[in-house]
Length: 304
Image (cartoon, rainbow, N blue to C red; front, side, top):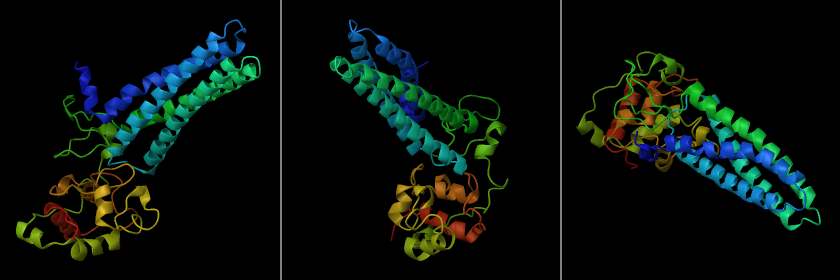
């Protein structure tokens, strides 16, 4: 096994980085208790504990950073529940890092102020380490729910059981869509079995005549901007401007891939290949409307 391949995937890198803060954080509680109970002739225990929690905080910060990178590659969160768990998981990760650094500071204070309030600082460090352990359990639970409950960040095996597939559930789309195993049907299956609206052949001559302002903006205003416009667009995806479309939302890459209409998240969501099928709680676009969007993307998704 080539262990260097872990650096090829933000999801794999995050999975590799979360175990250290989990292990250190849970070991930190008995260490904090030992530092609190240690007699004055063992002052080094508190200093060691401070360094230990500093390492834990740095490890937790690294895990959060790799998690942010992994989240930035997500383009297909199946429903609002997944978005909520991802947001909570991120918050819990930052909380772990913060509590570890608080414990570090308190134990350092207890070491250098051993004669005046040192024991009290060590006691507060123990409470902080206890809170850290509890938050770690919730963080691990939410991460496990994302991976094992919804398959976020996991490789998709072929329908025949082979393991050669590299597509990531929730990851940026490949040039061709994989066959999704039934175990992940609730996450990745389309809203209907035929992926509607149907796609039509793209005429290069017609594509050259499609413009964003004249042809695409009216469709977005009619179908999309109720949710993806205004001061607080849903999922952070603002479709009111060309720049917003290319930027994407909180958990996604760009909404379109210029030159590749059928690998563009906007098209995949409209057709129901990615869930939720768009627009939500409204009638789907017509074949002609989808064709206009696909033709614009095929021509380079230009902003004029």
